[in-house]
Figure 1 (cartoon, rainbow, N blue to C red):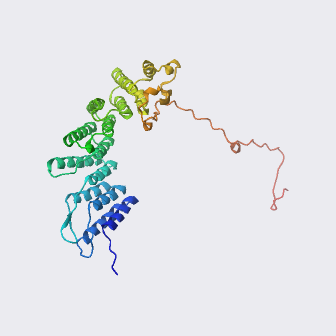
Figure 2 (cartoon, helix red, strand yellow):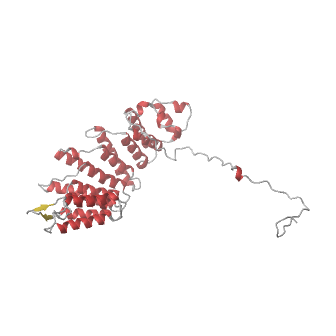
Figure 3 (cartoon, one colour):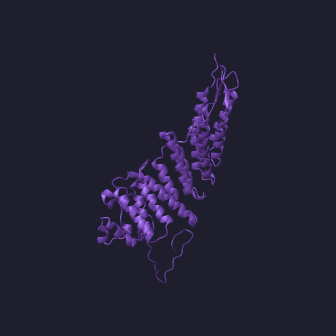
Length: 377
């Protein structure tokens, strides 16, 4: 009877099962199986050898384990894959294993999801390494795609340790545009997510120095103007919300901020792109006494005539043409606590069983005593 022996499909299936499990030790268990494949690839009795799928699934297992060192371990597996390891075939010849785009994207995504201080820079280093290899190696076929760029931009945008992150994100966006214009591939075409992430990085540069804020605002204006040119993308509701957030976070209160924010809000209403974020941020940009007159100047004077408060105006009551082109997911108003009218907590009425019992006043001169039998004496 021929003895059953595992092959590549069996090993890869088990590694994939560990990757999908989300177990904290899934990465180490997958790596052990990968090493076992490498050992058996050099044994005549087995027809097993790791391939790119084996390495990529092992990388995914580390990423899904959510352990603190998962990005480091995943990058170690990628580094080994970059050496193009070779494994002997059963009937002669060798199998050379090389990384593909998914190999890099999985590791970059692991760094993007990590909360480690150096995660954003490590993700950026991997992206720059991919671009450098593609441009310098004549036979290189691996190029970053929109997913790669979006993951790195997201890591930089949410980082609290990277200084001048708005400029870094903008330089990556320009590198993406340059790469797309060089190869003309659809995979490298900049999309709306990449542009909005750059604007988001600008908006959250408010904790930086004065110079960093000025540079972030400059980047935001340039990015938004490129979007309005419409070569690759056009602004959406999130774009207008992010630009208004930039005004609120990066510009000091005053006439200049009021004027710029008002122009943005008017432009967004003309294009039907006033979503929940835009409504929230315009109320941060302009003082409450100027918000209702702004709506009146735009043709919606009902709140001003009824002398309503600025925080009481809701997105659903704005003219339909102002929100006509907003996606359903961007319609929800994220009204901030600073605008919401504080609600008075209702006075809690005591329940019936919690009502205080009336004091019992004993009649003087009466004395009750109890004997051992429990009967009154």
